[in-house]
Amino acid sequence: MIELHSTPTPNGQKVMIMLEECGLEWTHVDVSIRLGDQFAPEYLKLSPNNKIPAIVDTDGPGGGRYTMMESGAILIYLAEKAGKFLPAGERDRFDTLQWLIFQMAHIGPMFGQAHHFNNYAKDKIQYAIDRYNNEQARLYQVLENRLGESEWIGCAEYSIADMANYPWVKGWENYGLDDAAHPNFMRWMAAMEARPAVRRNNEMAAEIRERMKKDAEGRQEINIFDTKENKDMLAKATGS
Image: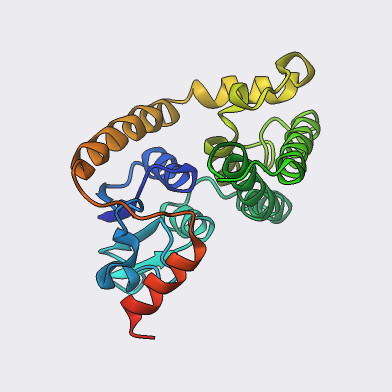
């Protein structure tokens, strides 16, 4: 059994897609980052960096309980556990890992910053908005170029590289992307959303968000964007 301790953010969703694709027995354990669940001592034992997602594999390496944090590492772990979605051939394997890390190093951080400065920053700083929107547009172009030479992002096979990128880039309409100028990306999007596991993920993500929203009613939320408050909460939780 895989326990996915998470919130259906893009990083949480890419693990959800992988679990659905692999057909592994799994369950979702809600971690409300808006309520500060990520600072609970029991969660910090799973993810010392107080980020989601984390997993508990009740039948881990060598038998027994094994925990993991970091979504990219979790995808690799699950791929090796299930023997799926990380090619065995050296070239395809390393190509897939390159594009997985591309998502982790570029798509995630830059899209996250664009989302923050466009929607949540208290002060509308035009320099920051332009910087991250332009970088976001550049990264969409990188994917467009890649998908012009490869059927899937990592290699010719569907892989964890596709699962990692999809939840971050599926909101392309909200970012003003010109679909006509990105035909390769749009072909890939259609192929992704034709997959039953991806459709199930999108349905489950909406259901989990609604469940967590109801659970949070009347409860005090934290400011997840206040990095000082987050630093102080981690220090308090760990007695530092």
